[in-house]
Image (cartoon, rainbow, N blue to C red; front, side, top):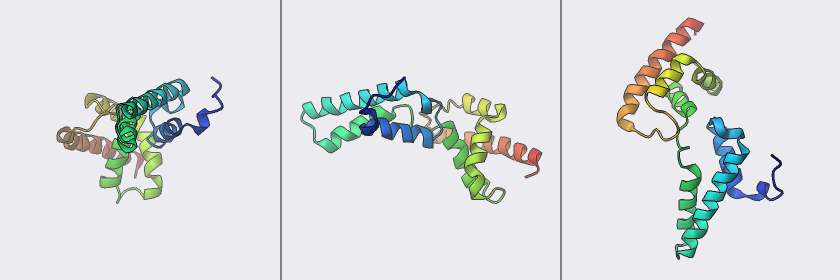
Length: 147
């Protein structure tokens, strides 16, 4: 799909592209999804503006539309656990690479599936249990690698 000439100027398109890339969401290269979501965000902004809301409120609601379901990625969860609990075992410069590697492994993937980590996972009550289960799996994997 050829990008339209104004897409590179679209704030919502660019913001979402960077967000998806930085948080390693699967849809990071799905131009149709990105354009559609950016259009919905712009529609939200315009609807709120037409209802008389100030621009900062319109922008906030548009950003909620843009990022709906894209708050916490599987990568984010694994990276955070590495950062909090594996800092003595792994140097900070490898955390991103290790998190990407671990999220691709079936041992980690099945735990993330069981807890429903899919972009909307903001459940603090279940996070501590998830954290310890993932940490146990990471420990076994790192021990297997001799790290």
